[in-house]
Image (tube, rainbow, N blue to C red; front, side, top):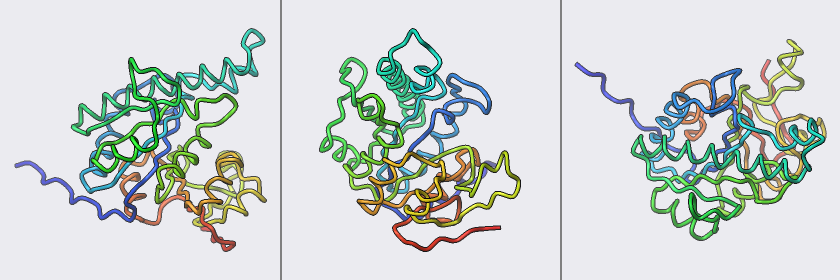
Length: 255
């Protein structure tokens, strides 16, 4: 006798921008790409799509190469070149995720900010939105196509362009803390915090440019731990996980 599938979630948001860091694509503490990790993520994404969620995904590339770190550690590489290399790393991740999703039966399109028609569509806002309306997951790679811009900022910009209801930032920690929880055991996790407080407290959750884009457009951000299976669904379902960054001066913490 087989177990019956779990009921589909009731989405709290219709159109979602999911930012996947490079850490999502590999096992904890490793680099490269782990297809078993991608299979787990793909299974969760399939359930979102089956629930009627319109989903766009922005890929990071740190599991392969971080342009900023590479340029700072290598005198042989021009900083702009290093950033372009980092953008290409996100395309590699996007291709791997596309294959994993399509193997799971999820219709998918890969769009890139740097034109490379042999492997992906160019990012065109109207085409991206049309794919979403047709139930296709759109993977957005190569950041913004410009060096010195983080993939967090790319995620914020794309959220604005496609009129996303929320930006979900999947990380290896379960929210935003008052200090680094790995270094300070007394660090306090926020359940909700305002954009202004994140900036004023200099909390290193995403760069200021990305926060400003979300703040100007009133797009809420949810920071959560992707390594807990089911958390992506819980996030889209509006459950109380991680930390929400909201357009309000009020904030709450959890002890």
